[in-house]
Image 1: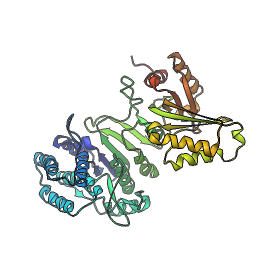
Image 2: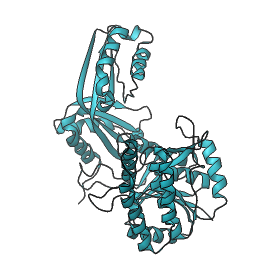
Image 3: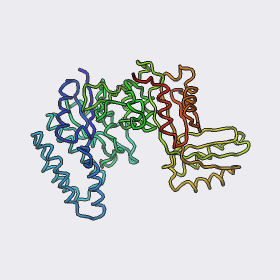
Length: 441
């Protein structure tokens, strides 16, 4: 029998009514055998996510403030879910263990991980599944980098001993010490992908509160079309610009084993959602798959006569940025010029030091800095087989009176990056979308 791995996000486990939906989804398909869960999210506007409460608990402890007042609402949240579902999840015992570890000076990572741990304990009891802790199964090196092969071996061995199981997302442990190590926020998506790879799953279903991905941000474009199918590489391009409903690192484990990812809606399980795979098929024939962008970049332009003849110039420029701990997004170049496009948030208070290092080490003829540049990524598998895509983008923007500050097509020819002034960002996204997506009747 094929195996399906499911991951349910915070909104899907926020309360008892949502968890009942989870059981209906799981019981609808006998192949759905392994379930990864997040910590409970918000139940309503103004509510708190459990993870945020645990981060607050950690801060209270770090500042030597009494923490018992915070434990009460945490326990109440889980207890109310257990009571409504009519299950005994041994919560008194679990919170006694938590108190004991808090008094013993447990790590902040341990504290924050309890959201997923308790969620998985509770849901395993409700489903009648085994509970399988990811602490000693998802392994990291001393720098917090995932040990992919070791993790896959440990998870595969553990899963083989359980017909059906619920696992907590978001955390594992340092291989050398056994101490809890966390993924970045949203990391339960990665856990689900790792479990899917280890289980040899036929599909990884990522259940959330939206019915897959949309071709553009609905806050910018009214009622954008859904994306039915998208390749892993397209997803990465769009995710980089912020258009994703899942953690972008979740792609890699599934992609290694050619496991499709299906983004589904817990509240509308009949919707097919978005399928992410290695396939290059594009059923609807669209030239583009999606549009995404970010509005706040800074462009540092360096000018130097005969730059092209100066061996190592670009390497030295990049080394300066690397030494400052900054990543760049794009590097448009000319014969005598080099520009670095960097997220403004990356620069913060480092800009002056970087400019001084450029002046001293590169001895340029001139340096200019321009803030308020927006980047828009237009992504699609069919773009590399379609003539005139860039021309259509330029024409659409020109028709709206939008000046293009940068235009760059990747060597893979599945994306075009357009730079415009930040005030034109949303208008530019709409113009490009309307150019490539037929209007609905």
